[in-house]
Image 1 (tube, rainbow, N blue to C red):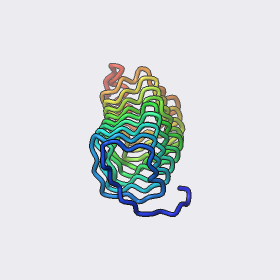
Image 2: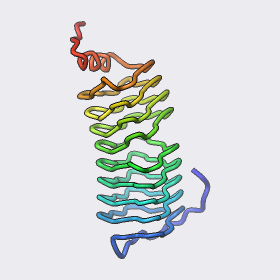
Image 3: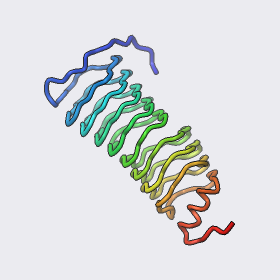
Length: 206
């Protein structure tokens, strides 16, 4: 992350709407907010730890270089927000939508991304491990030439998603329509091979 002089800043909202404020380079921890709206707020290079945001809207916010540790964003939306080089460490993102957000260069370390809307995002060349994308909308996503080990894609929408050239060993894709998934040169293990075979109507016979 870019070097900046961090400062612990009290994170309080007098109303449910926060507009134009600058929280960049601040340390924010143990905050719980619900139903709030953030407009043009700058969180660049901030550190957020053990924060919970539920049903919040982050509209056109700057989250570039933000470091998120053990945070929860449940049923939140991020229209027109930027996450360039943001880091998510063991975060819970359940039900949140990144439609319209820019997520180039993000780093994801573990966490629960189930039932998120991540359509058309590019996760290529990443090394993800132990991330749950269960039930997520991953249509048109790119997971190319990377390693996505021990990840859960069960029940995810994967139409036109591409895993070409990637390592998918120890991951699961149960209940997925693989007919439009691009898997050329992907590395898979026996469990995934059986899953794919059964999806085509074949039966595995050892």
